[in-house]
Image (cartoon, rainbow, N blue to C red; front, top):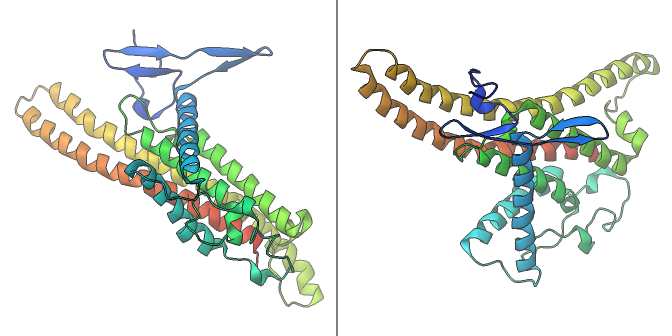
Length: 306
């Protein structure tokens, strides 16, 4: 008997309370009752835990290897270290900047300039940068999204980031983090008031225009974080849907009754799978980078509004 949702055209990119294996085998996940509330575990929930544990394992191992001040050795560790340093040196530091221009008179220590607690995982004898205090969140975004994306390349698993609820939760966390850092830097009132840029207007015009502009900027704040969720969801779901459609060509040809069509469709579908699969692998990195870059950009706009 088929599991629920088997007749769904988007079955392979949706979340279900089971893992679908070959030969119509289903590994059903348990449900949990907490204080009378029925909580059903799903495939994407399990895969998100796997992604989180994997990132924790990798960077716990990497930090232990370089804690002595020596470079990490081995291709595996160098790969993850290279990605981390790229995000630090080409995304976070140049995008957020050193903050010296916002004129609040903070010392270097207040910006993390000489605080060892803000030092990045891999120093490589570089001096600490004021923007490094935002690195833990941006690194977490990048590597968590990347691993979630890459899980979709494994048979019978899937990409949790192809589910709108997952990307929506990531966007909400990002928005909350932006508000937290902005409020910490400017004060709660200062952060929200800074949504409307300062304008040299007469008192009358300011009284009329500033509330309208603030409202527009507030709606824009919500929209841009919503787009952060939709962009990642649409790209990941779209790629996996294309792969599923290409594979369906083989099944359709097999049941079409036209014998000459099958030898043509099968090699074409396999080639299409390899080509689109390669693009999907590239997109896994690109989408993680875009998510991390936009999160960094939003943080920079919050802590340096002008």
